[in-house]
Image 1 (cartoon, rainbow, N blue to C red):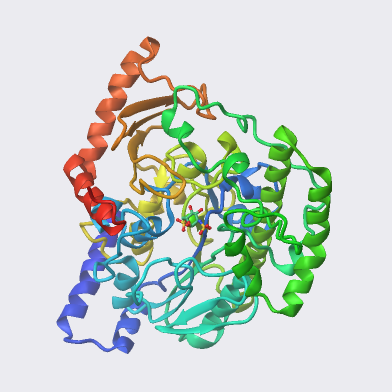
Image 2 (tube, helix red, strand yellow):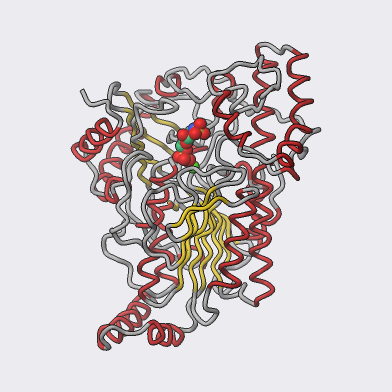
Length: 537
Ligand code: SGN
Ligand code: CA
């Protein structure tokens, strides 16, 4: 089957080479013969934990529209990133290469848009391509006929957007605006006779979790119970102990938890930063905001909570705002799915929903991501393509964001560049017998930095995980995910696991070799990072 498909690709490629400088029309004629190629809508949110998608069954919130993708297609239970931080994850997704190969290892160093990405490849065979929303990488995106992106992290209220290189402010709420721009491109800006690729990327639910007015009271009556390891003591896990991402210890009462009292008595280090965000709102937006938060602020002052009561109050404030921002994301997904239905495009359009990484919702007492522990290493992946994927498909194999680029190229019958390190999961998700990987590789580099997560890399198999923390410390951790799914017990050097440990070290060597990584490469990036941060000794 694969052989036949490659043969088709080759003949198409020959055809293109044969006619010098083929016009776009010729290209789309060719591609139309190719049994119409599928459209692709790749939806990515920012920091959307799988725990906060109802299809994953955690019971925190309801996301009926995102769930539709899984119900009518597939859900991936072991979807992972290769580097749990925003811009690097996006670079991996675009290039199909690990961070140390594509060069975007952290949020600080630049991304080289001149390198290959799958959108460029789809463009060359006549796809129309658009990138809308958050991308978090400087420079004019390459590979897209149309781009309308947020500068950097973007803002929730009255955000700036950069449309094909031109910046302008758009009034309203960022999630709805991003959806409106995506729908406008689908309805009015694309040529309906050509296949399309749309990257529809939401800023939400990224910090600092500012909900849309209509969702300000959602979950008002609900009390969220913290996860079982909320009061983790980090025993035998020094990197975890050094974190600066505790809900109790590190969340700012005003910036993160919105206690911007008009009297100004709640003074915090980041009060001013939140004031600036609040000041972006117009009078009507502020009125809706204040109507909800002012009574919450008054009650907070009145209650003078302490200790665990305060910790759990913080956890609840965080959860409510975080989940509220997701509700608007879910609405947008619904609008896009409805559009496909009304246009008769559902059958031949691949829709993927994912996040740039996972996120902690109180596990280990945390928010944020970065660690190779499950909640941030994992990412939600839901996918619908009625032409090939049966409704209700469940994928338990180890899939990574590294695999998106080669998978999309595979669906479009475009030759997968030899430099790509991911693997197409097209057959896997279609239910065909395939040989699949038994281990995945992870790297994290952004240290010293925000949230104080030590540099590390590691390997995960179906059952075990081995992590090496390095740089100004040097230690190992190992977990038995079957016996200890919440990763509370570091079993490195436990004699009972001596053989497992040896095998995991071998596995780590194997994946480092496979993905062409080694210590001198990370040293090189370390030096560039320290220089960029002005920290070089
Ligand atoms: C910002 C956030 C951090 C977050 C990083 C990276 N701080 O710096 O909490 O870890 O982004 O997030 S904030 O005060 O600016 O909100 S990422 O998803 O973009 O990688
Ligand atoms: Ca992110």
